[in-house]
Image 1: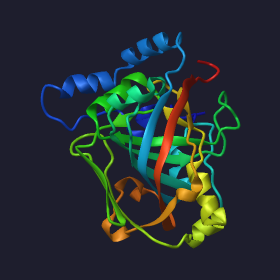
Image 2 (image 1 turned 180 degrees about the vertical axis):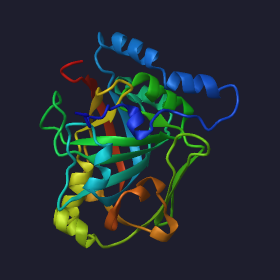
Image 3 (image 1 turned 30 degrees about the horizontal axis):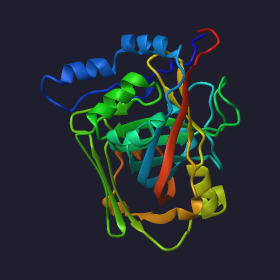
Image 4 (image 1 turned 30 degrees about the vertical axis):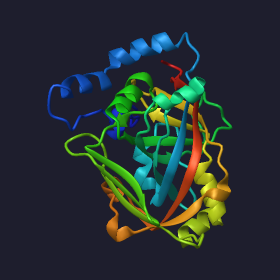
Length: 301
């Protein structure tokens, strides 16, 4: 009898790093970013150390969410886990933002020496956390992650298991008047492409599919924003990375947006079955804190 059990690694989502750059830096950058040997050495060293908590003063966090047919995206989900879904639909979110001095929280005011790159994170929502993780933690599955800084791309690849970060050839995320413009272009690299234009609106309304799923705009925003943890594939078969985060957010500051669809494009989701419209909103500012990270291994590993 042939087993249909799949091996879960970051290759499942095509998340090996490929540089868009040409020149001397390309080969060593790709080697380090994809090095399983370096990752193993780092895990040994950090197993004897407390987690280095990270903090960032994030601004202009633009969320855009699509509803996808759960059956069409279940191939992306690790074995043994289930998507959060209602009426056969599951939310897929892209959030893009500007970091503010992203670095170790213990540095306090000295954290200002760290840079403030752009980041775009793409995720699905899980029904429940994996075995071995805190079972009261609402959890997302990281699908894609891109940053505008080569240093932060390499740093997250080398020092973390949960962020398989890509470096786009072009990455911009700007507010102009009442619109937010996001452009992510991979060039010849491994980053996903994304082009988004969202516009501020006054009404907090939901598409009918979102209304059936969440009931109200406020409930939808709360669910999509208030997530406690994330998991990601790693270079090791069936071993997942689990990270806990803290996002103390005043939901009253969240503002509704509308995706200008004729000026926006996301090739990644075109292969999946979409249903209804989109839900977009912006959080002007928030404190991001990464509080833990560890590996979840199958019992036979």
